Length: 140
Image 1: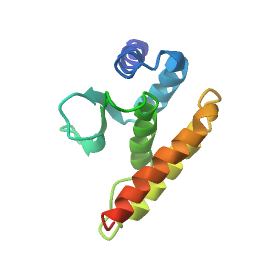
Image 2: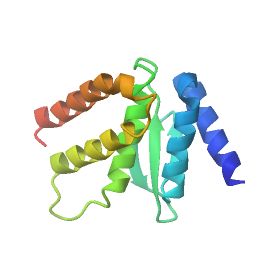
Image 3: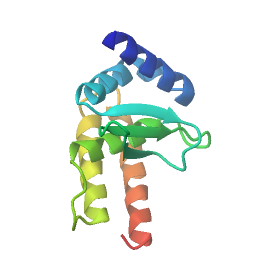
Image 4: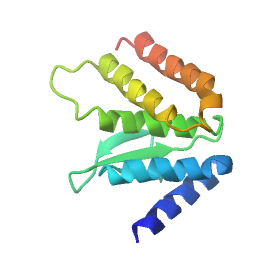
């Protein structure tokens, strides 16, 4: 049953984000995410990609696939949100910018675990830097 969930989630992301060449890596990523206790879903109506508390007190990554973005950005967003999960719940006094930097550090470590993502590491860094700069511009 669990294997079917991983296969279904993998197929869904590959089809919606056009990431077929990364199918085996995506399945490994989902195995790690779902085995950690984090949940995942693709949403079409959300404002943005985020990690949220679900109704059963777990945490869920809601990934929004943007049609105008390069397909691989879906992986960067997924790994970034998983980085938030890995870094733990936000505590009083935590600064947004510090939490974003930490989530990207976890995401970078995850990217480096998958040899077929390494050729795209420059794109990962560009996306990370763009996102962090947007937080800086907005005063975080």
